[in-house]
Image 1 (cartoon, rainbow, N blue to C red):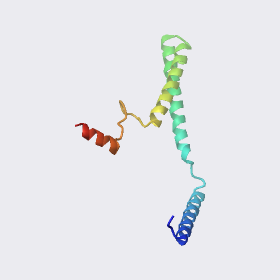
Image 2: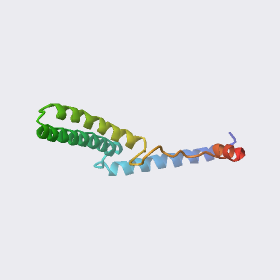
Image 3: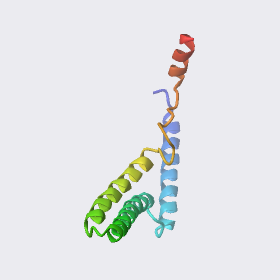
Image 4: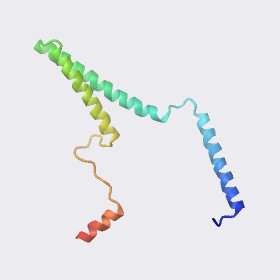
Length: 117
C-alpha cells in the first residue's frame, strides 16, 4: 500500500476510460451475433443432422427389408445418440482425433520426469 493517492486516481481514470471505450465498441455492434449463438447453432446442427441421417437410414432399411417402423425408430435413436456424442467431442476438444487428447505438461511435471531418468 505504498501507492501515491495521485497514482491511484490516475489508475482509476484509466480503468474508467477503458470501460467506456469497450462500451462504445459494443454499442456499435448492436446487430452483431452474440458470442454464444455460434456455439448454440453448431450444437443444434450436430444434433439435428444426427437425427436426420439416422431417420433416413432407418427409413431406407425399413423399405429395403420391409420391416416398417422398427429400423426407423432404432436408427432415429442411434442418430440422436450420435448427435450428442458429436457435441460432447466438440466441447471436450477431441474433434476428429483418434484416441486420447495429449495433455500439456506443466513445469513441475517436467522436473519430476527429468529427476526420474
